[in-house]
Image (tube, rainbow, N blue to C red; front, side, top):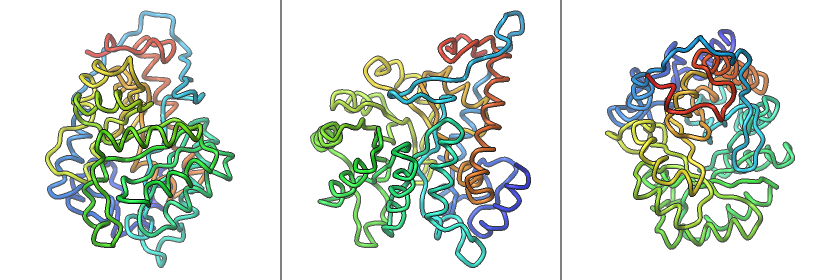
Length: 342
């Protein structure tokens, strides 16, 4: 992983420093790029919130070989982890002169690497069309094993892309409703907008009619989680979009417990933001999430090591998660609860 990170550092120069600790402290305001919006406080809040969660170490038990496998939304995974949807290699991760990994190669690395690791990767969306197109192509190559995410486009573009997404053969489709404030897209003539409850219900029906389940990403309040549940959404991702759309929000895990308690029996609650280790994954599960999405570290692994890099990174996460489960007395994922929190 050190070799992969070093190569990623060279390829992403000017866009990401690949810091020893990816916490947003030195990349505040670097959007485009991999930083957080404005002061970067929302990015930092994700990492700091997880750091403030403490685990109760337990060693007097017989959970010597924890089983990390689980099932989420009907997907059998080697661990409760997914690759978050990130795209835009050209403007977020380094130009072609220094970075030989283009959008198609990046999407392939994330989707194929996730599949090889026994988890599932999500594909990104944006401008230009090569972003979503590369994600769709990679998911088709993986025989539908991937989750394409679509931005909340205004007008017909949303429905056109949802149709293309479901045509990949994927079991689940996502909409990152937290992209609603990306002014840059509107300036490029491709506006996005907030999603009304009525429109959300239409999206749910559209996706369900095509045989897929729906995730929406960007839920940060109990009230919006309840709107999602009432609309028939299958899963939500508690997320502040990696701190890239609104300055001054709390970290995802700060609001996760209340949301999980409110709607956890009605839909699947996932979370992202600041997850950097298998121990972080365990904390998220103890706080009420059924699975965790990892973003920036996957991008680094994909740029620095392509498919093999993603596989190795997930291997590292699984090893850390297994160890953390053993040291908190969790024999399997079902045994993880708030009781392991100090």
